Image (cartoon, rainbow, N blue to C red; front, side, top):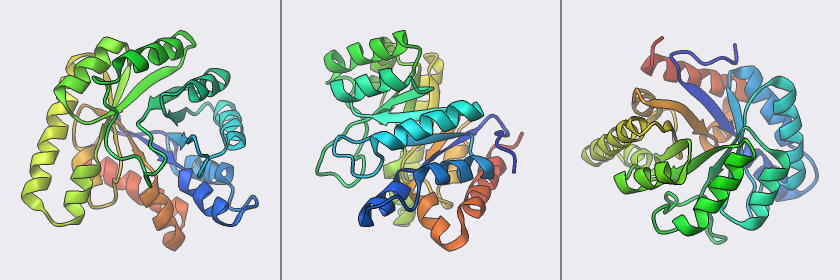
Length: 255
């Protein structure tokens, strides 16, 4: 399968949880770098990796390897990072294609909710400025909230990634009416962000059942999906699961 997107919608594959499996036992297997290569071969348009403060999955050496791989293939690396001095310096050293600023709490299992850009603007704005000056494309991972979107634009972020977790959870729980309301919020958030000149991405919790509705939002340019793809790959293989996800995206957003 070609690595190019169709219908204007790109697929970024987050390979964090390959590293989670590796770190559960130690050693080097399975290798996130090998997963990244396989994902790109299977049709992913780019790779996403989150280097956490506690290094619970992706490591510093993984980022070095992924940076070299993506640069050699001309593919984007999306570096998810907390808004800290340490992560800012790492991002400036590697200069990935994009840096997605996310909230991070040591006790959480995964990223919970979007970044509160409005409350944290005095800390976030200087990081956005430094990254942009270094040629890194800056994204803020936020809820589809008008205030957060307006603040993201004011800070100078080029991209917002809308948090889809609540919508995906409602789909899983069979909460049809609640899911419909949350989808409407995502649709309106995407429209508002695009109207402000921001590129719109979406991610968190997306699986085969929820991808179609999110992919159908016309302003969304990229989906970032990780945990579900890596988990499902245990049963059918990474090539097959990415191929199916790509097909569902293309069905929702025909060229």
